[in-house]
Length: 249
Image 1 (cartoon, one colour):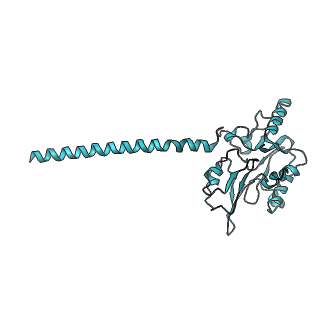
Image 2 (cartoon, rainbow, N blue to C red):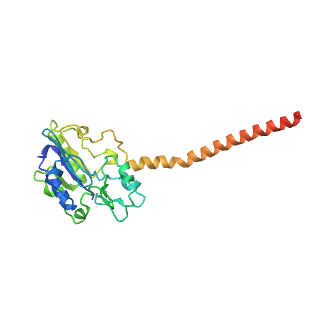
Image 3 (cartoon, rainbow, N blue to C red):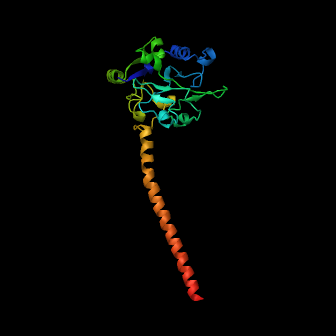
């Protein structure tokens, strides 16, 4: 069964232990200066943002049907059955198509290294494969970040909203966005206030791309027929003009 993460911003206390656990898990530096950064980067894969006493996490959403994986020409990114979207650095050619394709602007590039790689949260794929929770969920002291079966997390999120409707925005972010994501969010303030796109399609983006590509043969055929017709008419006019000129002589 597919796994997921449920982040409930109303339970977050901004302790940033999820940030520290993520950094330690991926061998990334973490200090007070990095803790103060409120944006994702190649050295900070998850971030806790604050607006007064309201908090929100940003991390890879690990989409159910990830656009990043669909555009990768070398299969460096792939969706696992357990839920994580993994990255294989040995396959990566640095094209950065994944960065352009991601609807959440998640993948980051190591611009300052000699052999740069793409960096993003992979939902602790190795831990998940062993039946363990993600490092961020294991470190969270309040239960704001919870790991489990995605369907069970959805049911729990729906129950929380139903029992405390005045406490939440009545939407589970990630339930339907771009076809659904493995990371689910609850909040007491609109998600767009923390930079999450709210007008994304509910259909998986790779499916939209497929629809466009599937129409190309028809477009090409029609275009070829149209150009052929134009060529025939032009050639016919030239032939008629030449014949009239010859008869006039």
